[in-house]
Length: 301
Image 1 (tube, rainbow, N blue to C red):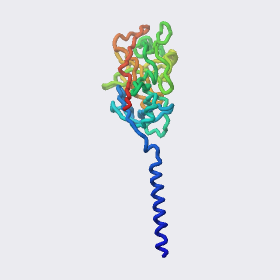
Image 2 (image 1 turned 90 degrees about the horizontal axis):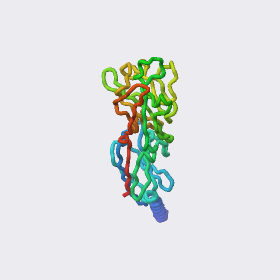
Image 3 (image 1 turned 120 degrees about the vertical axis):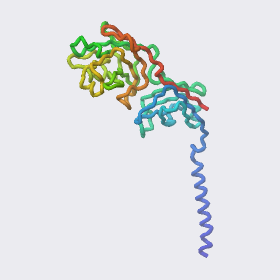
Image 4 (image 1 turned 90 degrees about the vertical axis):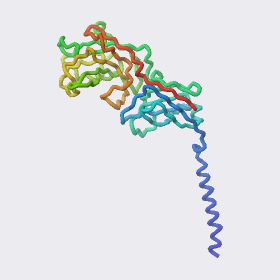
């Protein structure tokens, strides 16, 4: 009798559990979302070091929605997103994030950005970093931090010593980015190395570094460097004395939280032509290097 009495109770309990399980499985709205594909094609997007990653973002209904992280080793990538969010999207962003970053928030180092027009968005650095149309630059070979007039070829500054004005025409960068000056010098035993003249935010004002300069005189209030310290230059393997003439001089745009301090970032808006580099007070003109600017196109399928 006791066994027959318990059978209906067991069947009823099983039925309730089954219904509850079905309701639980069917109650997730995300499982019922219709999804679509976004295809991203990038150009001139360089690879990042291991401690940094790119991250794609969709701006939909005023919210930054992460689509996933990646490196720059492939020109085409696809992302899955709900059709509702894709239809409401107004902008597509690519940021640079620390590697293995647990934060779900976008960094302020936004590399590419573009608004959607219909089912596509064109991405460029003008929308994200700064409008680099109309930029220009020059520099002067000189070593003002010592009193030796015979080594002017060993340093350079991005300014006009005749007028005392800045020789760089560059826009102000947003938070997350900085400018940096560089020169490529020969190494002892062969090869070359890129040496930084220092990071800066404004063409009018000293940069953040003067480690190679002499401390006899104060440097000009403009970005640049005297490459005179044989002690610090030897640590970089650089042949001394330094002669800037005929060497590559360029400006890069760097992430403010730089994943690789020793290597210039691949966005290099101004570069010299490696010829006709004269000593002060002559000015050496730089050219716009738009070939280094990354771009992208996103298509909603």
